[in-house]
Every structure is written in C-alpha cells, then in structure tokens.
Image: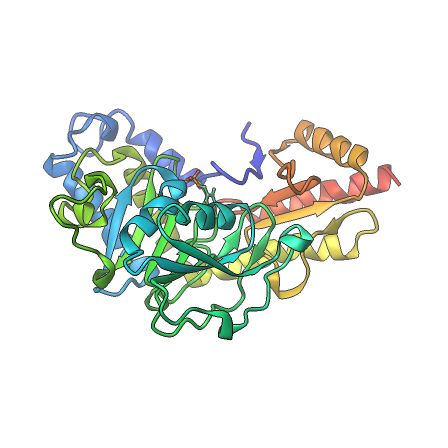
Length: 360
Ligand SMILES: *Cc1c(COP(=O)(O)O)cnc(C)c1O
C-alpha cells in the first residue's frame, strides 16, 4: 500500500508518472532498452532531453534569452557555482531567511564579499524580514534570496526590488508550484528532488548575459563554468539521464492538469485545508503566520515535545510518513508538494482531529 509521504525531499512523485515510468521501464518506445541504459549521445535520448527542456520552457514561460541547464551536484553546488561565475566585481547581497539561505551566504564568502541585508534568525527564521532598500548595494554583482524556506515554512510573498542588480533565487522547494515571472530573475536554480523529479538533477535557468566567458588559464574548473554547459547543451559530460526523463514526465503531468495556474489553485486549496485546521485547533499551531506562510512546507507544533513525538509515531502507524519536523525547529512539518493529492491533506487533518480528541 502506498503511504502519504510528507517528506521535505526526496518527496512524492505523481502516481501517474511512476506508472508511466514503470510501463516504459524495460523498453522505451521501440528502442529495445530502458532510458537508463541509453547512450546520452543517442538520437532517442536527445529527443528526451529536448522535449524535457521544451516542456519546462512552456510550463514556466521561460523567455528566449534564458538558458536551461540540467546539472548535478544539487542546489548545494550552486551555492558555490553562482559566486564563482557571477562575482565579477566581487560582492553580492543576501537575505538570510534560513539554513539554506545561510549556506548560500557563507559559501559566497569564499569568493568575495557577501553582504547580509536582512535576517530573520532572531525568531528561528519564522518570518520573512522587512527589506530596507537603502541597504541594497547598487553595485553588487547579484542579490540572492531563497524564495521558499523548506525547513521553516516561509515564502517571500513579494520580490525585492533590486533594480539593475540581477535577482537570484533558490527555488528548490517551490519551483513549479505556481506561475512565476522568470524575467524578474537573473538566475533561478532548484534541486529536482522536491517538486520536479528524482534526486541527482539540478535545474539552472540563467539569463544569457550572465553566462561568463573565462580566460583559458582560469582556475575555475571547466565543470563549474556555466559556459561549459551552455555550449554543450548540458552534455559536456554524462547528464543525469533518467532524472531528466522523469522530469519530462512530471512536466507532461503538470500540463495535463492545466499548467502552473492550476497547480497554484490546487496548492492553495491543499495548504488551506491544513492551515485552517491549525488555526482552529487548541492542540496544534502553525509556527508561521500571515502572508509569509509557505504553500509547500507547513511546520506545526503542539508545544509539548512528548506529545509531538507521540503524534509522529501514531501518524506513521496510520500511513502518514516523514512528518517529523526538522531538528532545528522541532515539532512536525507537512511538506505538500505538487504530487501530494488534496485527499492526503484532508486525511491528515482528519487524523489530527482524532488525535486531538483522544489526547486532550
Ligand atoms: C533541499 C534544499 C536545498 C539543498 O538541496 P541539495 O540538492 O540537497 O543540495 C537547498 N535549498 C533549498 C531551498 C532546499 O529546499
């Protein structure tokens, strides 16, 4: 029996996608082989990666002056690759809204001056800080945010106004969850394992003018230059072929559901089911309030560690798995990415109601 998996990542994939992949496991089309066994240089595989990129461009409405790259190394590799490629003048601004944003900020310090323009660390990152534009460096190479903070369940409800300074966003845990205006960003990146597909694939969407040409004798490794991957269609070396194929299937599934506008509507409904219950409950409460609330990750607590542990254990027995909160926040967290059906959110709330009745 399949469980409702509330993991922050790797996370649930749509059942239709898994079934399609299963049906094509032994033979993709009439190729006589699995996608996993195919040469990445074959005509068949080129068609798969091209279709995946075309679908991503269609679904996200990516303008023509942006390159789409299929890389490895996770979002964590981008914490280094971004400053290595984009810190030309040697300085960038950061909003520190959680653990991932902090990692991006710290890693950038290896390559230049990273300036924290705001932080929400004082309250365990439970809110998005107000931004004072007078603190923004007009001469910075870029301005970095983590759009959705996976661990703390916060999301920027409006984007910083950075003028001519390119805005860069880690969208690992919210990409494809709602429409975004790609043209507002210089670079977008996301590890695939939250909302796109299996682990092992990292998607980078970069505006062409930010793809830097390095001198022949540069110390920046070939694999860590965006230009290498732009020039080679993400095939400088072997790309994560199977993960790209699954992303293609996920994008087809999203298109079939009506695209990102439909995803947003559904995700808002799903999140409302849980937030409404948390706001009414006497036992459980959400750790984030108001417009900063994430649609994808919902942390909540009872205020009692023993009760939290009992809830997590009983939830697991009842088929609601990976609902324990991150160790830095405690309590619980329900990650409800695109693939979590609304029935999963409703079933979780019914279970929480019952738990509350039995334990108060
Ligand atoms: C999961 C996550 C990461 C880390 O991703 P890896 O692919 O494991 O490196 C970074 N940023 C955010 C927002 C995440 O949710």
